[in-house]
Image (tube, rainbow, N blue to C red; front, side, top):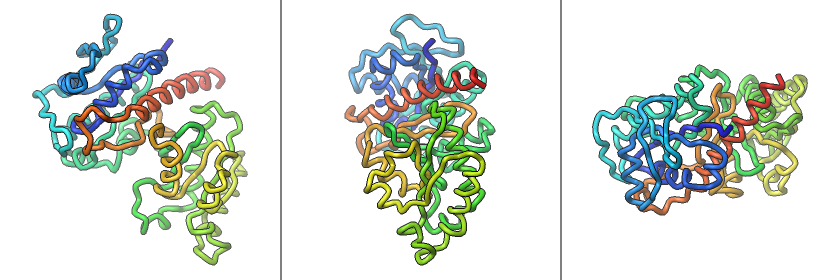
Length: 336
């Protein structure tokens, strides 16, 4: 049976609702899953009118779903008033709706009403104004699901990049890279590759923090004091991991094609090459969560919101990846 995947509203003043509506009209998406929209039907209908879309939306107040063929169910969240949609603007109300949709989607997953969620982009500024103090959706979902071992994993085709640190200022990255942190991230990444991507013996590459991976201690000590010992200890647990590699040469020589995943030390080190390889197809996956959650690898794009020109490819890829991981997790649990 096709999995049921919930797609959260995101910030309704951004491109989230637009790319969602475009994605659910894709034949690829409809073949792979049964989509359920989680958010305000008023918002979705507003953008459907802007786009002149013929998508048939049906408001649902509860689960299980009861819809006619061709209809897309919308689970209404916090219908307290008609939202004032102002494309391109930050709004506390938009943050409230976005946060509520995430909470609702995660709860539906935990109760097994749906099989996974895809979260549309949110504005951290609007979310914070609405009282959601998280640095990102990954951290929020980790709290809701009580998942203690989570990491951000970016996927573009066969290129998978995990992050040892995420939204950490550069001047704090070194202090954040403890041996325990690196070992834990390698463990989460290894387990996810096996369970979620169906790779029996995955190979992982680890990047160095400093230029030339520290040049044997001449350009920084982190590789020798923390990264190399972490790699050695991870190997002892059965993880196939190599490194640390100088990041520039690793990507420049296409050495990444020999590995199933890469552990980058900080945000831009891993995301710049990944987005250069597949900017429109990148997907953000929360590895280690107890539920399946993906997200398109782009932001709210306020500058083009409401114009009907947003590219839905990343959202489509996020939905397809969620469906694949749901399938792989079920197969993995049966084997266990």
